[in-house]
Image 1 (cartoon, rainbow, N blue to C red):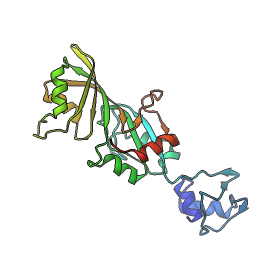
Image 2 (image 1 turned 180 degrees about the vertical axis):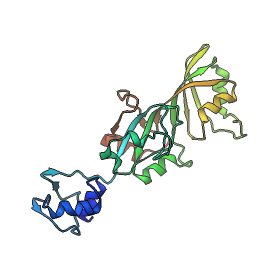
Image 3 (image 1 turned 45 degrees about the vertical axis):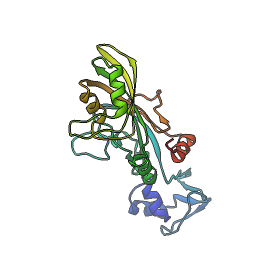
Image 4 (image 1 turned 90 degrees about the vertical axis):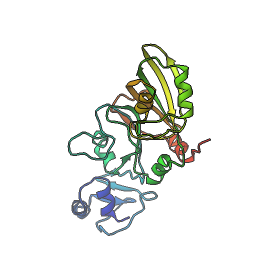
Length: 239
């Protein structure tokens, strides 16, 4: 990769500004000052420093966010805050995007990455990657609902969902449940409960495939995935 492109990609200014940094002798490669913007470097094996500080280069970035309500699962929007707006500039420069979407008022686990191949595998309908949600339901959830979800329910547009695994954590006027589905239709969890005459009043995604929400993350906070979590996602096969 050209040096000026490397610097620009990592947020150290435009290509023009990167060239000026090079001209000023601010950049070293393996301890040697380099002023030629066209020089190619391999940041995976060579050490590049700017003003004495090592530049950390990553081809891919993998972030776990505890998405807050009121924020869009999108890269940009003219009128609403997006999950990308919540990222630090040092992470935004990798141009990541949310893997799938959570409704604007839904909280919880959201994977953000620039690894398009991984995102495609996780979102492909053919892969049937399970996603588990915790929800508070207005109404008593019963064993009949468990059976209905296990068979698949018909949504308001006539679509019949694939089977979902419904677990009742607390049943009453307000019920706490966990629901695991392998699809991602628009407002699917809410519409599945509407199909059985109930309403979702709170919704949080707690897992996606092998990835589980880090409960230490406050709403709006995020962290990089560990190497183990990244490998689990890449190696994940639906049983």
